[in-house]
Every structure is written in structure tokens, then in C-alpha cells.
Length: 257
Image 1 (tube, rainbow, N blue to C red):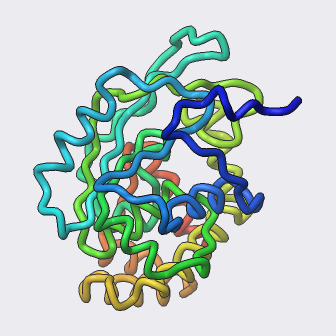
Image 2 (spheres, helix red, strand yellow):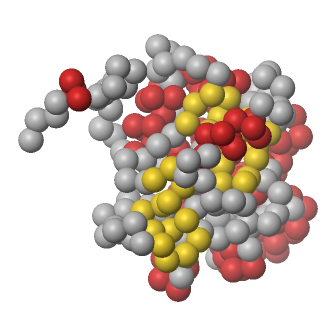
Image 3 (cartoon, helix red, strand yellow):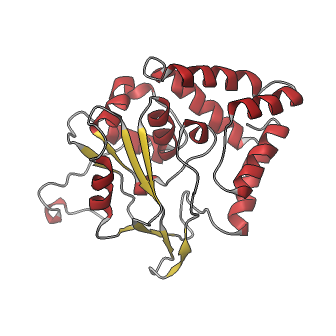
């Protein structure tokens, strides 16, 4: 079926992405230099933004100096394919930060809004960036480079959950079992590997103390068991929530991080 572009409002354009997965599709837009603005928001095709989503995001971001990379993200309302509500995404209570971002994403990309300073970080590295998840790496890179991350406990959108979701199922026993399998089969470690390689592109912008943490992490994550345990204790890495903390401990014990 053909798409009639004449039906689009004047300021909307359709672009052909690189067709290399959802993460690369989003980053191809983030680094498109002809897209300009003070703030940028990511949107998935099947979610429903709450009316005040952008207003709340800008209220938070405008309190941060323009030269500081800044990212807003939030909780979500979970709905089914017919937009019937059945719950909320987990509420994260610990502060956002680099020690969390190394081992866990904080908010879905569909909730994220970031400023021009954050976007400049990604313009600088160009097309060399390859990561498994755009939202996780936005959180990771911005926090690594001394940016500010705002997590809003109030939902900003209705997140549609259905059989064709690529990612995002983060609630219930099935979701927890799925995350456990990702640790056991090595996928989680592979994702961390890819993130660490990508962070090397930002080395000059990363804060010195975070560079030291990265170097220590890269060393102890492949060390013998007791060194891994001591490394986790020294680094003070953390995930949000008790179950996620147990998952982190398991991944360290099994050398799956």
C-alpha cells in the first residue's frame, strides 16, 4: 500500500532509515544535521503521548544550563492493543547516574526528551556509533559526560504492549524470566561489551572520574570470582529495584556482565 505524503502537515517529513535495526534508525535521526532545535523528543509509532508530556519535559530541562547535556525520561502507563490500561511500568526510586547507567537503562526511549548539548555529543561521533539499544546508550553517554538526567515518576505516555513489541515488556513474571535468560545466555554481557566499545568514542568528553570507573570495570568484570565481587563493591554500581539488584549480583557471580 502506498503512502500519501500530501496528507501530512507541512512540518512533517518522511525519511528512509538505514534499515539496520531500531537503534540505528533512531541514531540516524539524532545525527541528521539538517534537523535542528533546542530540544529533541523520540517517538515510537504506536504509543500515545499524554497531553502534557512535552510541557513537563521542557519544564524540567529548562532549569538546566543550556551548555550542560540533559535528558528527561519518565514512567509509562501500560496499555494493550486496544488502549486498555493494565498497569504502570516499574517505579524507580534511586537517583539516575552513571553507576546505574553502566548496568541498566532507566527510561524507555519513547519517553525521552533531550537538549541540544546532549545531541551535540552524538553529532561529534557521527556514524561510527553501534549500540544495541538507543535509549540505554543515551542515558549512558549523557551521564558519562557529566550531563544531567531527570527521571519523572509520573507517566508521560501510554505505552502499547502487544504481540509485535520489539522491546519494552518490563513487568510481571514473564518479563523477569526473560531478563534472567538474557543474563544466562550471555546476551546481557554482549550488550555491555558493545556499550563499552561505543563509549570509547566519547573518551575526551567523559568525566575523568568516570573514565577511571570504566577502566576498573573493564578490568574486574572478567577477573576471577572474588575480584569481581570486590570490584562490584568498590565501584558501587547499582540497578533499580530489589529484583534487578539480585540480577546484577547473579550476572557478576556467573561472569555474565
